[in-house]
Length: 312
Image (cartoon, rainbow, N blue to C red):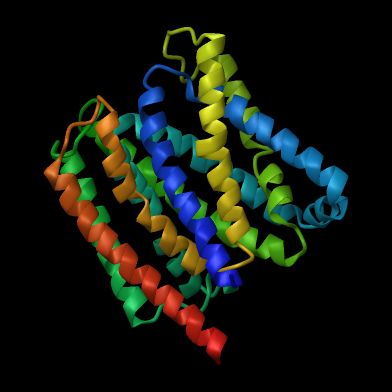
C-alpha cells in the first residue's frame, strides 16, 4: 500500500474508535468522574509513550524541546479540548457532540489555510468547499434541534444545550490546532509516539487537580473492578484513536485528516441504540444525513486534490 492508503486506514480506525468513545463515555460519565478516567488513561499512556521514546528515540524528545512554543500550544490546546469534549458528551446527544466536534476540525483547518498557515494546505477545491458548506449547514441544524429539544438527549434545559454545543465546537476547533502543530512538529523530526506522550504533559496534572478538588465528582464511589474495565476500554477507545491520527499526520495532509474526522458521527448515531439515555431522534438523523453527505464530498474532494498533486 502507498502512504496515502495507509494514512487513510489510520484515519478510518481513528473515526471508528472515536464513535465508540463518544457513546460509551457519554453514558459512563453520568456516574463516573471524568477526571478520574482521564488521569488513569492519559497518565498511563503518557508515561509509557515517553519512556519508550526515551529508550528508543531520545533524539526526538530533544528535537521537541527545541520547539517549546509548539509544545506549549499543543499542550494548552489538548488540555482544553479534552476537558470541553468530556463535559459536552455529558450534556447533549453523543452523535450531535461528535458531529459538531468533528465538523469543526475541517472548518477550522480551512480557516487556518485562509490565514496562510502552510500546514493547513493551500485551501479547498470546489468539491471540497461544497462539502464544507454542507458540514457547516448540518452543524447549524443539529445545534438548532438540540436547543429546541428535538434531539435524542439533552441533560437539563436550554442553558445545558448551549453549553454542550459550544464546548463541542471549541473542542473540535482546538483539535484542528493540535493536528496542524503536530504536522509542524513532525517536520522537525518528532514522530508519533513522542508527540503522543508530549501533548498531555499539561492535561494530566490538570485532571489530577480536578480529581482532587472533586470538580466532576458524581457522589458515587467507583470500585477497583469497574475502574479497571473503564481503564481498559479507555486505552482502546481514547488512547488508540489518538495514536492512529498521530500516525496519519506524516502520511496525508491535515485537510484530508480533518475531512475524514467528519465521518464518525453516523457511526455514533448507530451505536446509540446501546445507550439507554438516548431516544431515537429523526431530526438528529436528518442532520447527520446532511453531515455525512457533506463529509463524503469534502473527503473525496480532498483526496482528489492529493492525487492530482501526486500525479503532477
